[in-house]
Structure formats: C-alpha cells, structure tokens
Length: 181
Image (cartoon, rainbow, N blue to C red):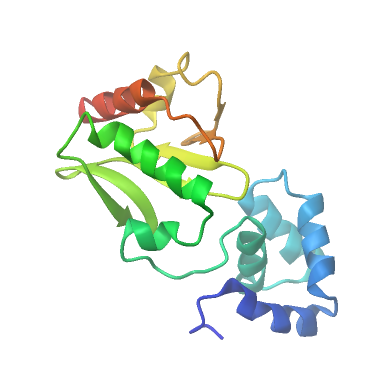
C-alpha cells in the first residue's frame, strides 16, 4: 500500500481496522475541520486508535491533498486542482516574475516556490477552500501587518481565497522584504 501515492488507497484498511465506513470517518473530520492538522491527527489517534499513517492519509485527503506524489514541476502540482485554483496560483507567481524576471518558480518541499538565485521567497499550498502563501522569512508577515489585515494570518502563512484577485504590490513587497532580510 505504501507504494501507491493515492491517499485513498488507505481507505479499505481504515474501514477494516477501525470498523466504520469512510463516510463515518469523513463525518468525524468534518466535525473537527476548524482544528489544526496536528490536532486532527491527535484526535483520530487518541479517540479511535488510528496509526499515524492512517490518520495522516485521512486528514490530508479531507483537506484536499489526495496524493503523496512528489511533483517534478509546478504544472504537475497544479494539474490536480480546478481551473480557478490553477489560474490563481499562476497569477500569484506572474505578479512577482513580471517585476523580478530572474525569479524561478520551482518545486521545493513538494510545493511551488518562488526563488531568486539561492533565496527561496515564498511557497504556495493549494487547499480545498483557500490558498496558503508562506513567505520564507516569517518576519515579513510582521512587517506587512497592515497590508495583510484583509487576510487570515497564521504564524508562518496567510490565507487567500481560491479565486483571489492577486495583489501584485503586496507580492512584490514580500519579495523585496525577503531579499533584504
């Protein structure tokens, strides 16, 4: 089973081992959907005896990550998402590469990242209901507190809608602040 990158390949074993259909498990995750990833994992492990592998497969699948496949390029990463999400991610990177033509968009840590020379600038993670943007220098988030006020800001990331009208100025400020950190 480990050789199959589809997280759903774990579902038959989850149903057999824990005695409930997947609909039950998805309902459990739906009830705790507002919790953080690690809290969801701990909930499944503590309340139902899930192994780390099964908990991870279920939680990540429910969060929209249906595969553990490692991506060779950004287009391969984007292929799993609908057109709107694909275009939003492309627009995010285009907003930066228009101003910083030396920026490359690469796969790092299994996600698209903007990179200039040896400096990783920002990573993007697509989810079911939002897109997370993670500047590599978290101090950038603090410096841009006012500009990020319209968004949900976490410790190391901020959320934008999947159909975000990209704020090119904000994205370029992130690049500048990161390069000058």
